[in-house]
Image 1 (tube, one colour):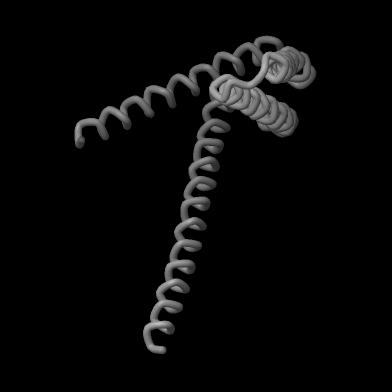
Image 2: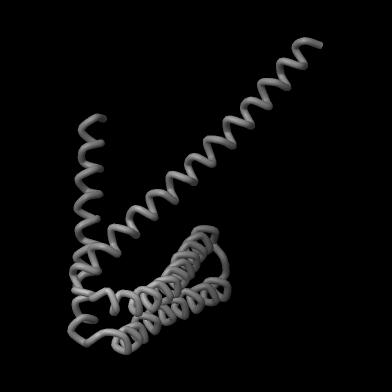
Length: 159
């Protein structure tokens, strides 16, 4: 009887600590995303040279476009992996063709969003500031890639 209660207590404690750990991991991931997003906003605001009035109009447009881009990228990645798994599993040409078509459609959707974005940005910013936006986004991306490489190289030293 005592061992049954102990087993139940151990299982309950494991579940509680596991749930707490999962919550902490999700919270850390969300905190990380928010931190990167805040850094990106500050970086781009400076790079573009946005006035407070421009920023008030620009950021809602930028966030809407970014949401569309994220969705499109998710679809591209999803169909990439589905296509890859189908090939590994030896699926039929017809099934692979269907996935390839979906993958290419998702890429085209992503390209179209990028193409339309510039026009939307030009409605709220000058062409020069739109160009600065694209340059700033690339600078920010490269800056974070360098940071990531630096961090991963430090971890390799400890192996």
